[in-house]
Length: 199
Image (cartoon, rainbow, N blue to C red; front, side, top):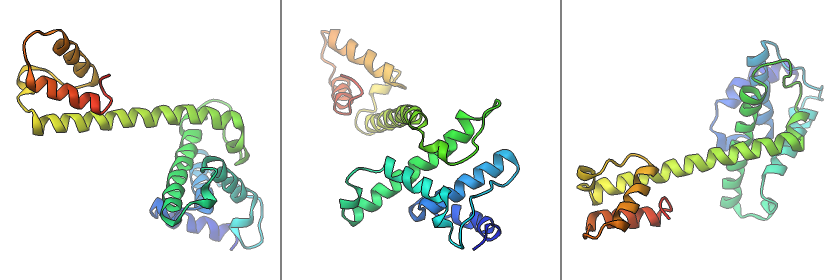
């Protein structure tokens, strides 16, 4: 396979489910993003008919090893598959972050795959990605709580405006300071505490 053949295959490869991706697909996605951003193809280091043996592919294999659990090789089949998907998704987001955020404008730009292996870049991305995941997790928990309330204590919405985490925290203070018995509100706050939304 030459580079022309490789570029022709990119749309097909990156359209597949992430469960089927590997370090070569990630390299293909990198090339796709590079071409999108710069309106020119990334010139790969030449290989002998195998995209998996080029420098860029090896860089993404190294990156996979950096992001994967240290015990990845010891994991069972299903756990290994789950971890692989987690890492592929993370690297996919790392590529997007690099092109769409870190170097979205200005004189500096992504000029190769080696930049993805720099500890400073990895650490900066890790901080932002962790924050992104935590925000998503708390949003999911809030949705779970609101759904639980509508099914189990719908009347609580008649008396209280509950839309975000702050509303539940205020309700918790109100319940704590109220001398009257408020069974529905107490159930809601107990559920919020169970989910970790209210301490």
